[in-house]
Amino acid sequence: MTDEPIVRDSNGAQLSDGDSVTLIKDLKVKGTSETIKRGTLVKNIRLNGNPGEVECNTKQVKGLVLKTEFVKKA
Image (tube, rainbow, N blue to C red):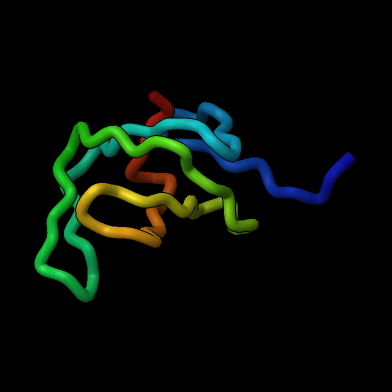
């Protein structure tokens, strides 16, 4: 058994590396003037060991960290 924390989206579905998620809320990106709109599909997420966060890349922002409370599994 691994010590990896179980990462869940806003609906309670378990997330894993490589999953695709959809944003459930418009999010402003800190440090930029970008806003990522609700409904944006983010592909190929990476888990970072923190159960409340996932790492990903979007067309607008590379190296983005999203809180799992704002995403749902696609």
